[in-house]
Image (cartoon, rainbow, N blue to C red):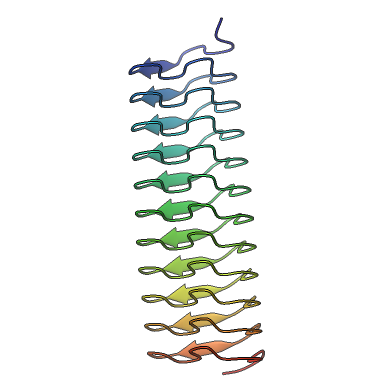
Length: 196
């Protein structure tokens, strides 16, 4: 028997199947919200959107496998093909775009917008990655802003930094507290902490 699904709407083959604590929620699509847990007041729309997600209250996952197996994604919005899929600790975040925020870990209060933006990013809380592949595979980029195509892509140790421009801060290493403005600014910079 399905548990605590009061005032909810599940539309689609196996939508909301064995979901737990899904009060006032809408799961639309084949296997949308399938075995989801702690997903009250949420909207999952698309094939396997929110599939086996855990702690996704007050969230909106829209798109093919958006929010699929996401963990701790309370008050979040994942829109796009596999946006936020397998993400962990991404509460109060917005991932918009194809693969945006997919496989991200520790990305609370962050905005990843664009194709592959923030994909596989680690420890990127309170950050904004805007642009195609912005912040892709970035590691330790808390409180940072990467704006532009591949800005901050694969950057390591780039906390409290601003990389603005195409490939600005691309593969930068030890770029904490830095500002790289312009195309290729800080490209593969090493030990660039406190740089402008």
